[in-house]
Amino acid sequence: MKISELKNYVSSNEFDKIVLKYYCTSDKSDIADERERYLKLIDKAYELYGDGDYHIISSPGRTEIGGNHTDHQKGFVIASSISIDNLCIVKKSDDMVASFYDDVFLMNEVHLNDLSIHEEEKNNTKSIIRGTAARYKELSYNIGGFKACQDMRVLVGSGLSSSACFEILITEIYNYLYNDDKVDSVDRAIISQYVENNYFGKPCGLMDQMAISVGGFVSMDFYDEKPKIEKNIFRFGDFGYQLLIINSRADHANLTSEYAAIPNEMKMVAKYFGKDHLSRVDKNEFYKNLKELRKVVSNDRAILRAHHYFNETERARKLNEAIENKDIVDIIKLMNESGNSSYKYLQNVYDSHDTKNEAVALALALSEKYACGDGVVRVQGGGFAGTIQAIVRIDKKADFTKDIEAVFGEGSVIPVEIRDFGTCLVI
Image (tube, rainbow, N blue to C red; front, top):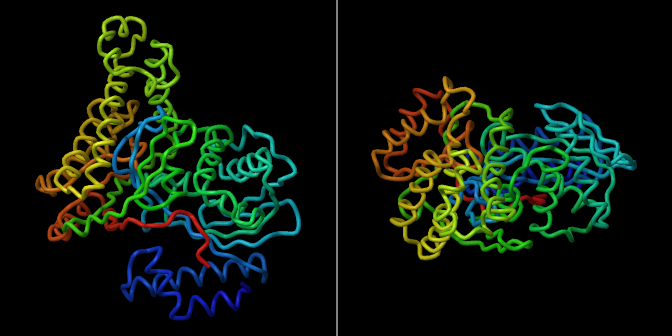
C-alpha cells in the first residue's frame, strides 16, 4: 500500500481486528496505543524513504513453557509466541542495498553484493541481514535490497529472544518481497538458526526461532533433522491464571559465553559416549558410567547439566500431554519442576563470573513468595539475566504486581497472552 492508504487503513475500524488478532485485546485504550504506534512507524518510513509500495510485518517475542536448554541437544521443548512484537514497515529498493532503521541501532546499511562472513559484524544486526541473504542465496531462493523501519518492543537483553525475533523478521522480508511467500515457517526458523550460529556468532538451539516463526503454543521435537512441530490451543486464562513476564532489569546481551558453555558442556558428556548430542545417549548408560565420566570429563557442572537434560526433555513430553488434556494441576506441577531443575542442575539463573548481581535469582525468590505457592515461577529461555516467567491467579495479579514492582520498578511485571500467529505480514 501507499503511505496514504496505510494511514487510512490504520485509522479505520478494520484496524481493531488487527489488534485483536495479533495483540489479543479488544480494549479501547490498547487499540488506541497500537494505532498511534503504527501511524508513527508509517510516518517515520515516509520521512526516511518517501512513498512507495509498503508492507507491515509483525514479529513476536517468545516465552518458553518447558524444555529449558534441551533444543540444542535435539531434545523436546514447548514454547509460545506472545503478544509483544517488533513491528516493521518495509518496501523493495531498486538496488542490492538493505537499509534498516530503528530507534535503538539507528540506520544499518548492508550491501548484498558481499555475502561473506564479516568478523567485525558478529553480535550485530548487520550480520543477521547479510547472513540471511547469504543463506537464502545458498538455498537457491531470491534476494534483493529493501528499505525498512522497525519499532522494537522485544528489546535487546529482555529475555524474550530479541535476536530470534529480528532474525525471523528478516527471513520474512526476503520471503515476502522476493519469494512469493513460498518459504515455510519451519524452513525460515532453520535458516535463522544457521545465521545466528554462523554470522551472528552465537551457538543457539532452534527453540526461539521455531516458536517465533510458527507461532502459537508449540511443542517441538528436534530429534530428527526436520523437527516435528505440533500446535495446541491453550489459554491460562481459561483456568483463572495470568501469564506474566517479570523483567529483572538485568541485561543478558553480553553473556554469550555463559550460554555457549551449556551446549558445549552437554556435548562434552555426549562425546564420552561417542555421540554428538545427549539425545543420542542412553539415559541409563549415563547414570551407570558416572564414576568414570567424572574422571574423563573433569567437570561436575557438565554432568549436572546432562542430568538436567535427561529429565527435562522427558518432563517436557509429559507437559505436552498435560496441555493436550488441559490438566492445569499437572501443567503447574511440571512447569515448576522445570524451573527447579534449571536453577539447581542447569544453573542458568546467575552469571558464574558475577555473583554479586543476581537479579534473576532475586526475582524468582520474590515471585515465589508473592505467588503464595499457587502458580508457576521459573527461569525461562537462555536465563542468566533478563526475564523470568510467572503464572499467577488472576485474583492475585494486582497485589503480585505491586509487590514485585516495588523492588524492580514500574513496568517490570508484563502481562502477556499466547499469540496464535508467528512472524507474518499483517498489512
